Amino acid sequence: MDSSIHLDNIVMQFGDFTAVQQLDLNIESGEFFSFLGPSGCGKTTILNMISGFLQPTHGNVYIGGQNMQGVPANKRPTSMIFQNLALFPLMSVAENIEFGLEVRGIKKAARKKTSDRLLELVDLADSGNKKISELSGGQKQRIAIARALAVEPQVLLLDEPLSALDLKLRQHMRNELKELQRKTGITFIYITHDQGEALTMSDRVAVMSAGKLQQVADPITLYRQPKTIFAAGFVGENNAIRGRVTDVNAENITLDCGELGLLQGNNPGNLSRGEEATLFIRPEHISLDHEQHTNQLSARIEEINFEGSYLTLVATAKNFVKLTVQISSDQYLASMVPHSEIRLSFNPSEAIVIAGGEDV
Ligand SMILES: Nc1ncnc2c1ncn2[C@@H]1O[C@H](COP(=O)(O)OP(=O)(O)OP(=O)(O)O)[C@@H](O)[C@H]1O
Image (cartoon, rainbow, N blue to C red; front, side, top):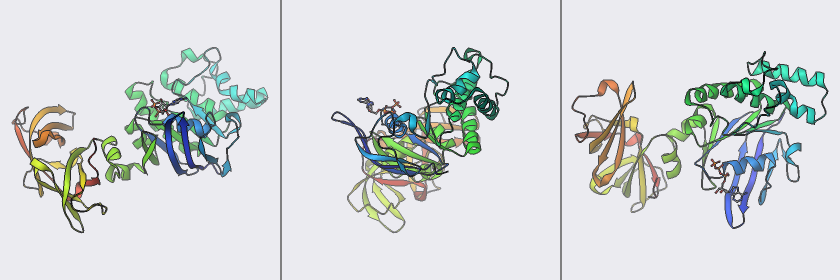
């Protein structure tokens, strides 16, 4: 079954405001695909265009190779799970799951067969007769998923479905969702502003900002090779240092970073001398050994946050550049106290350089 999606240059305008700028994207059949971005960047609008609740101002949505233009939401091969789940409190768990089938005129015996199968799938085999109020947050979540799957969608659309759960349950449900996706083999499109969710569950992630696609990549590539200043700053903790290009060679690029001196990073291949650029270095790639790498910095510790196996030092370098450094707990020294100086270094090969100097 082809449950691929092609967003063919879709645009969504509300009056003069463009909520989604021209978006051209393919999502593969059976993929767990996430849209990640801050509040208001257009994620829900994209989901609504796929589900048919909104018609794109321009462009077309294809599902399984079929153009969905003019196909109403209830005739599309999609099912949506909302943030608030929208379960029916007066119906039993099984009735909730069977609701979509009843609307389609499916007979009771066939409906029961489906709800039994789905209750088993979500590990709640003996809960069919329970009331919704008798379920925990995580169980409600699973029933919402079972209800969405009952109508046998080709594509499941999930609009921040874990946001109402506490942290522990949220982390647990990430694994469950991923597992369910594997078991059912259907395409999951997940939207979230939580990068942890997007990175742990997805095959690929689309990073969005202000209605615009920033980067589409698998989680590791997104973390290691962000392509835009927004993606570098939004996905994972990162340190940003602005500068101007002074030298370019095959491997490295050198930036004049004002009072921080000359710093080197990986040559991205699209910058030349005199251009503004931003260097990004991850907290785990900064060393406390001043001599270890060619890029060297001094900074003053502002905060020390003990996280168990590691700790983060938040420090300020010259030019008020804020740096976060992650070290393992065994590297901690009693002399590391707020206001003390630390000397740091990092390897140019681990620093990403991106054109531009806008705020992160
Ligand atoms: N029906 C509408 N009319 C006018 N503007 C709208 C409408 N729906 C959404 N918008 C605007 O479009 C932008 C994108 O909204 P959208 O709900 O897609 O964002 P989002 O990324 O899903 O945000 P959140 O994470 O807060 O749900 C926002 O600025 C929003 O105010």
